[in-house]
Length: 195
Image (cartoon, rainbow, N blue to C red; front, side, top):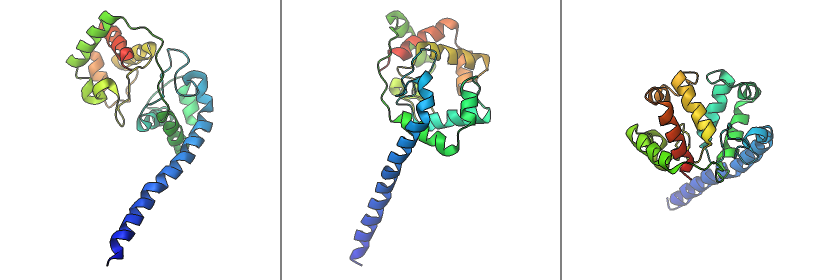
């Protein structure tokens, strides 16, 4: 009976250790598989052009779901859809884990301070932090948008408003219906200002 707590501790330690050693292999495999992503998203997940999203520091779950949605046709993009079609489930998990482990670098876009304040007010009014969390750091299937690319944020807000992007269970589509172009501009400036 005295060995039972020791064995239980040993079993728990082994369970906690096992994923971390497997995770290193997943990240290495993800980095290798993500090499093709570097042309748009940067080797470390920091986008090379403002029309592409930063993937660095994003939740692995969100990234995995987006890849899966591109692969299965719930989300459409002329570049991403055919690339995702070639990925296995394991590839998508590995790529997502690789980018989730990277660090977001400073965004070169200089936000307009007046628009930042107006964007913050609009974000508070529409309860953005309820899903995206404080600091817009994201969670699980909800993306981290803090410090995201201005052009990309604008495009996605417009896509949600026009319903050309609908892989959000209706949440962003509903919010976007209430936004004017000026609101979107202000929100994008606010989002970029968050580091």
